[in-house]
Length: 68
Image 1 (cartoon, helix red, strand yellow):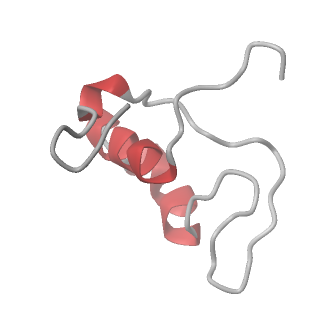
Image 2: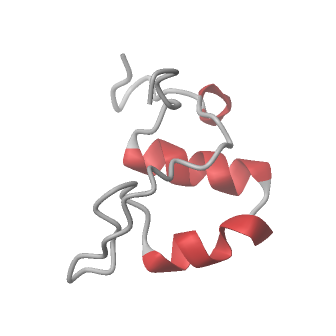
C-alpha cells in the first residue's frame, strides 16, 4: 500500500487503457466509467507510456480483471 512518504512508483501502474466501455461524462468532464478526463481520453493515443501510467496512477487503475 502506498502513502505520501512512500508513494507507489509509476512503473507499478500499467500503460493500458482503463476504459470500461461505460462512457458517460459527469459535469466535471470526467468519465464515470474509467474516471479519465475528456482531455485524457482524447489525448490517450498520443501519450507516452509514462504519461499513460501517470493517468492510471491518478485514477488508481491497476489493470482489468480477467473476467470483465
